[in-house]
Length: 198
Image (tube, rainbow, N blue to C red):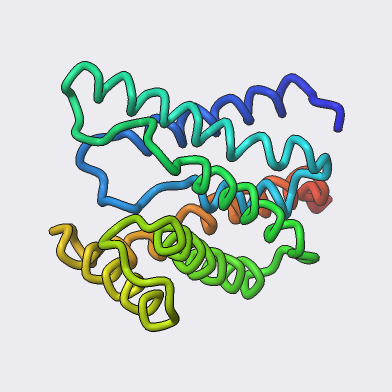
């Protein structure tokens, strides 16, 4: 993929805005653009290497910002912690999942956004369970179900509007709509310019 100056500027702006928004104090917990960026990159960017790099850079930049804020006592959220590599692996996986989107339509974006949120929730909490994190539930099917229940209860009791799971889904739908909608409008204006009537 050959980058034009405009494409490079757009990528840098997406990275900066997404990273800064993720560490913005006061935003609803879980309402962040990284999942939507991963889906968008997978579906739109033809060079698969750059498709995977873009959302990972967004995560890394925001994690660095979180760590700086944490070190300076400005947030209780650490940027770097044990097991964090799982989140990066899952974001890369969501990008690959986005590559399966053959056509960008409203229904496809909606379906992939909801599916991506569910997949992320299931796999991230599976990783917590298999790694013995959380409440250290037993390595049985019942223990896994307890771990998922713990996750839902944790998100509900976190004290945020609509709970974490609701915010994640709403955030994924919002940012996917914003990214894909803007892309659709931009491509329609560039590919099919408005023809004035004589």
